[in-house]
Image (cartoon, rainbow over all chains, first blue to last red; front, top):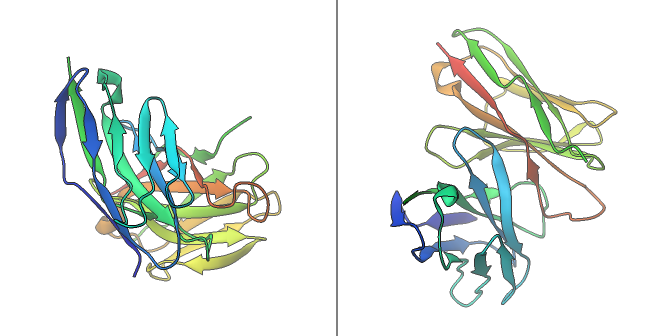
Length: 113
Length: 115
């Protein structure tokens, strides 16, 4: 079946540190891939997306590249801020069916000053 | 441009009761999906509505039912509440057959607590 795996958290970083959150997926066909972010007490916000192999999604300093050969979509940011503290969800949707998003379990990030 | 809105924000019920949650999709969107997010977990798909019909359903019992209205807004109903139904319920919308088909936009959620 289709699934998403993320690195386990929580992740704690100092401000201005480099961030990587690993994500790998299993899916039939060529899904679209997403990173969503959830700030404390809030719903999900779309952070970035990529729809085909080698696409790079980027937003607010975050980047992720769709790697078909390794079935990965790792999230990176060069210099994190305290305001980036949140839970990050990697997700996919199959293009053969636009019906549901399949989420990973989430990775909690805490950035300390 | 209003995003996805949900009501109420919080809700407390007791076991065995019934609850109705409401969602208004983003302007221009005609497809609504519902997700359940238990504490510390990723959201799980409940079902999706398009043209007032349930188009696909996840692995949830029949106690979970829904409805979509002609204005595309939607309701999620849960009967015979169990303690395990306590969760954040998220509504998402996307433009269906036009526009950015593969991207779902989420509302702020309704936090349901079952005592």
